Length: 228
Image 1 (cartoon, rainbow, N blue to C red):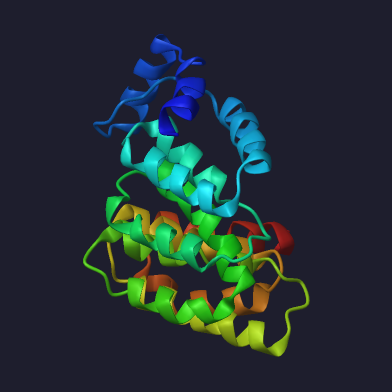
Image 2: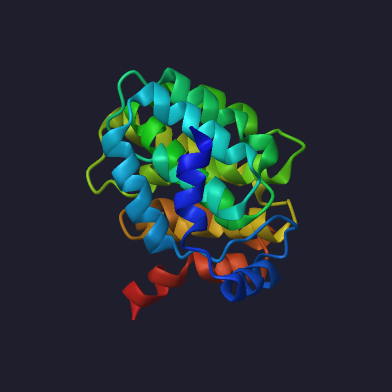
């Protein structure tokens, strides 16, 4: 099964672009030089053709290749709002966490996770465990995968509780000096400020001095624009 689909990706390879991507991402793995729009088109077709069971199997196989585009395609195959049943999808996505080692691959997998968390918010109990991981990329994923809770203009009471719960995780991250962790806090707050500026102002009042200056500045980007 894998060969047929991987060959479709490889058919679009651009070695020069691949070399540029390797230099940019700075993680030692094969890069084929295939652009995201091409992967989007391929995986859209595959999603339409394959059962959920076959998509899970293909995603797992593509991920295990360790090829940059293979891992992106694996995540894209599982990025869909409605998947029934989806427990096996969620389990597979979680199994990838220890392999996260670069932002592009991690972010694509987190986009698939966002859909599964939105479908079943009780999974936040499992995500909370990620926040204490020794693996930086797993801790970061807790923020990136929960971005949907920044985007609601009129959240229900339960979603407000979830929003505050995740802000609690962010508060626990502020003394972590890792750039990617600080960036994830800033990203979450920046997006939330578009819909719930008062919570962001409160967070920054309490914790802003503990954040790295670049993160604090990014978190308040839209707050400054609103005040001008």
